[in-house]
Image 1 (cartoon, helix red, strand yellow):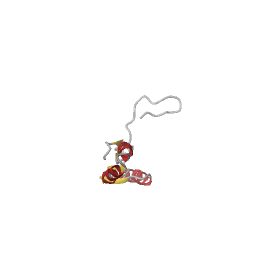
Image 2 (cartoon, one colour):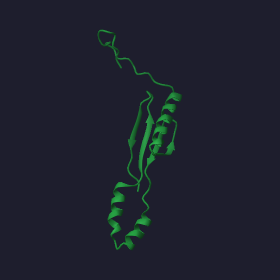
Image 3 (cartoon, one colour):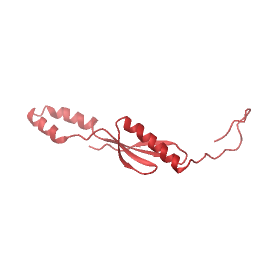
Length: 109
């Protein structure tokens, strides 16, 4: 990080300040509250990282029964739900500088 002295940028780069562990944990908790308010569920949680799950698993038994009773016509709906539905996981973490990062994981059916 460099600083503007009013006329030019400072020539030397300054190290980024590292925040305290308590502040990192607080920032993660705030991010998780936002994720839960958007419909996420916390699956796993450590001090600086958590896994948030969005969506619900597909109920294959009900879809199989509906497919049989509708002479396989429900199978088309089942395929669409299988491709678009399911659970989506995201790893939310806070780095030592306080930046919050979220990366998605593979879908779970």
